[in-house]
Image (cartoon, rainbow, N blue to C red):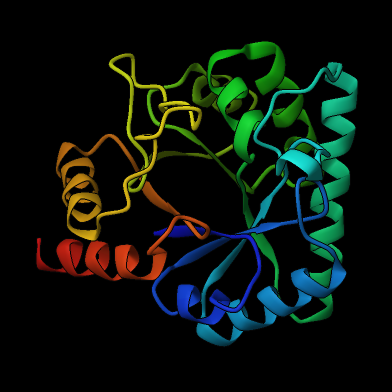
Length: 221
């Protein structure tokens, strides 16, 4: 169960309940200080480290689409991964997966012209690294075709549209903040078997309670 870790006082509490951490690496958020702090906490707990590259748009936390060419996307994703990798290696760790963030993730899920340069960036960096993508999205097939391992991802703390896409954060009900509802959704995804990894965002209100409820529900299943 991965959690997106944006930084903040709750990092340690979040990391106590997850198996993989998606760490912002200088695009939408994060700097050398936050990357090192989060990576140290993760390594101390045996939590796997993943790079979480997003649009280089801190003002909107990477949650708004911006115009970038395929070459620009590839270069930005590769640069962000490299930034976190340098930190992880210095601490004796490694990056084992890559998960695009926010608007970049959502656009890649439905647009091959966005998914392909992400895949190229990962492939040229480390063809053994797993790429996380939205369960049921064409992006998973595109990345698999070039030889990358992939993990279909579902979200415990987000509501979905009928077509399987995530409900836009522009809607007030996009987030699931009730721990019991989130746990029930995580359990449903696990039972359906369509996702290999379940995510909870670190900045969702009540994230620690949601993670706790999800882990308890999945452990009891």
